[in-house]
Length: 595
Image (cartoon, rainbow, N blue to C red):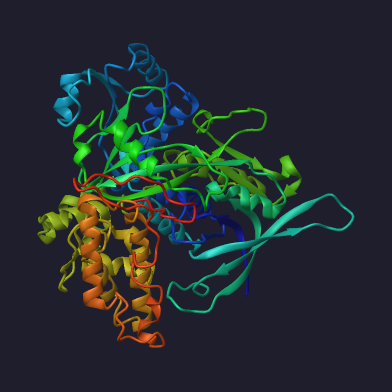
């Protein structure tokens, strides 16, 4: 199968979907391909911080300036994705006054609004802060939902004519090298569609599609170096892993940063109904396979408990690792990943490597994704002879067009319950269209307050891929991690999808949930995991009942056993007092997730 496009964007994270939106709004024919779901890579494995720039105000001021500028833009164009939590850089007695003043001065130099608070004033904002916190700097940090943002960017791109293909992996780049010349040009890519071209159902034949493109954009993040290899160019991305842990409640409502030189385990981000502890920073060779070690999780709790002592008793829902796509310009010689700039770089391979039709965008931060997309879109339009201007800083994303209408819609439909309020926060200006239904609308996911109407709206876009439905709605991302609602979500696929497809979708959702849970099996969470296992074993025969036969097609989707039955869990021996286990996981135990 063959197709043609003006611009082929490789990567379905924040930058890739941002580029697709920007180019499509300028009238360029765009195709985006992503090997997994949207946010499959780094974007789906972040701590959900909308940077004010304060984190980089001392060590990397250009990045800090970019962050505060984009922070203001995203609050306007993506209001339904942002929670305006504010942020605090808190100082403990062992943290130096000198650095506190340097941080304050750096923020002022970068145009970041600040307010100095006493320890008592900081604890008035956040009562669970440690009693010996003596000062704090207030900054306009926020929390942002990366899943919702990328889905909105992809929807906007589609509305402007773009083609978005998930589960579509690049297996090769098409490089034209005319005989007798030193010139080369990337003219497209070979794409493997895991579930059939243009389809999001399960069980279809794998297809290979050849997409010819006038220009190919490498927005693959931590995988950008591997994509560069396919084109014969060097893209020196240094993957750096970071561990993050999700608690079952919000211990704080404000982003809490440690006011000391940037390091490990120094930030706590409230996100939806949870809080996320982060993070570590360690160079790895491969963005796909690396050790996920218990010592990293222990470090998060040890360090952040000094700031918020109540974390010592926190229940951990899941732990996940993300990989930063750091880029070190040639000749800088930086050894420590913490010292590598968080700025972004556009690599024009025509000028740099003599390979036309191919451009990479590397480095950067989630908060600066839109600026990154604007810069590379300007470049591509110049190459394609397109003169249209960027409008992404001014045109709201779908869901954020009319934020003032949210309360009107809730009044009109009597949507005053906590369930409706949570749904409205996710749907934004789509609230009226989705929730204003005369059909029965029961709650499907109690933990995250997701109703049938919201699920069905997501299924219209995601098809039978329940993990895609999950990132659109947050269903199964709450305290039970799908234990109560996963089968209900699968039931919403019937009768449109046949039983084997529904069963396969359900199994894939449970296996994805298990990835992050298996790193958190101690105390109350171990009990929750055991309950989930019992529920699924007794209600859906997922414990491999001897009465079943392996050749029964009704059970073919479960040949690998239920979540947790065959996957390695490392040392998960829980102490009698509910303490965390010790030990480490091996490199082949992948548990990536970004809730």
